[in-house]
Length: 176
Image (cartoon, rainbow, N blue to C red; front, side, top):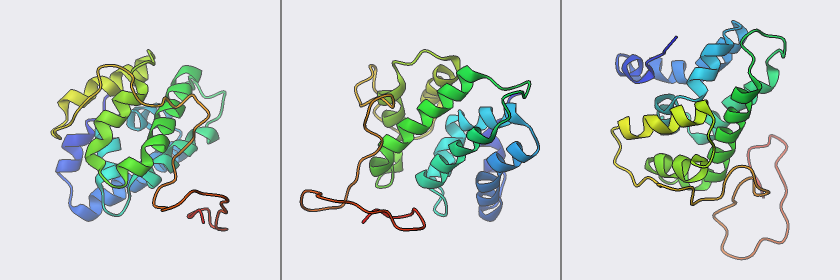
């Protein structure tokens, strides 16, 4: 089953678009439509639209990938390889957050630069969708950025001096 996210989003008003982008992943999980959840989380158009939406952004997208932790392992559509691919995509997005928050147009370069070395079908399908995008971008031909398999999870930005200590707010939204 293919979902053409780009054409579906193009037909919607802004408020409908926000609702679809915000709710689709959790609705697919609640409806036990795991295959559709896997498809949209590895669909470049969905990723790009959610990052570019002014009410959502990269943080909301990264949270969507947390839903895969709630999938029943006995579900007939459960695939360990797909789960691993989605975790890699989530990791690449997390590593790119400080860049994508400033310039969402860097999405193609960030994903290709971090994921090209992974030869799973889901990641290769995602990377093959990049040339079809309407956004002009520089795209890596080799994996040149830190991959999502290392020790680095994310980059803190916005500070002027060295960081000596950090604390997370109780609602997990800010690092101080």
